[in-house]
Length: 79
Image (cartoon, rainbow, N blue to C red; front, side, top):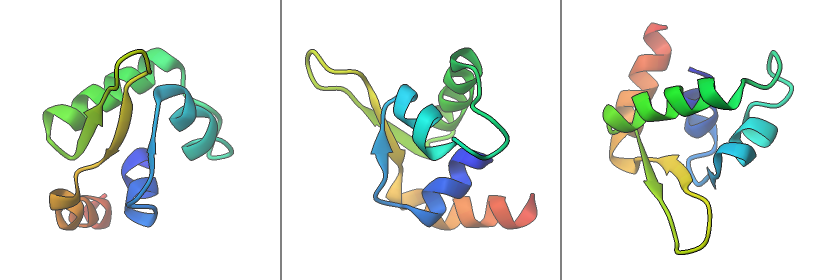
């Protein structure tokens, strides 16, 4: 939920797993372990709530799926 809440507030955000852990989620109850974050991102990807891109030689980046912003807002309201 923390990832979705961040993306709802910052829909232009795009970052790597390390950047998400150190930036998006820092100071909000501590940084999650990378393995937990990978599982959460995988789940969000499978639901198409986020998208990922990877350029040759660079780490994978994650961002909100703009077509799912309304669905994300609904999920957060119901949580």
